[in-house]
Image (cartoon, rainbow, N blue to C red; front, side, top):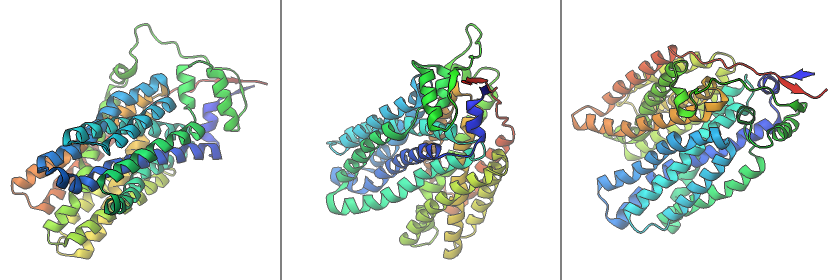
Length: 443
């Protein structure tokens, strides 16, 4: 008989094996959330110990983001050649060692370099885990699965932040990095035991023992065994591969739009997350109320990622995502006039966190489905990497505008326009349709 294994994964109800794979991806994303926050929480004691100026602290805060961008751009694409799982294991080791060595840093330069090294690993993990979550989810629940995977970031940031405060008060800033390194390395056996290699990768790249490995996955997925692998599509001689394929005439428009969407959304999102607590205080709220606003952004983010995933199981993801972008823009405009009311500012902060985080989660869910398996990690990695560049630039642009005399809350009107432009770009995106290959199964 003839069956289509991938089509069954896409259309059958989600099984325990698939849910477990997605759960591991959520844990991997929690490491990203903790790593982004760890430098922010330790900046004050690190600065005090080494008597650092503002520019030096800024370098330390940016080093991790630079590393993550480089990891997404240059390390994640190797997952399309060697496999998602081996790359995740390598990047876990890289980021874990980087965190442990950060705890032993003897100078700001050493710490900055090690933050960059850690970021390289995190960038590779984020892109590869995002792809695996997408590939093992059924078609109906794919948006929800990847969106839930992205909630790991907010969970890691929230739980890691609370733990970091406790560690700082008892053992100092080095203990926070030590804890992060140990936890990162402890995830390696978790991945070895329970995170499967991508079925899409095995079918597209045909590594050694591909048929046996596909059949092993088929058993765990509760599907019939294959008698042989499906025939590969014949590629033209000299056809572009890897990164070059992203910019071929057939894919160039999609790739450039994905890059632009990631840049705009991350540009707006990181302004919101980085500046909101400070700008609330500048607008007249107390320091504690500013911190509360920042916490509400993260809480809203957990809800927003789940909400956009749930809605995308009923309506097309592009429509839901464009709606989230426009609602985020409207909320940012409303936020401009909320400075006089504490309750209104905090309530809008919660909603802005919900919808802006939903925009990021929606992009993470959208990007894997516009590329086929042979370049999926490369496409997603470059999208996330370009987005990280927007994240790095965003706080600096906001700072320049403030120095030029802009009112703090008026910046939200500027960044509202960014989300409106992103919604317009999304309307131009036409996800590529990849042909389904027949797969022969034993009688």
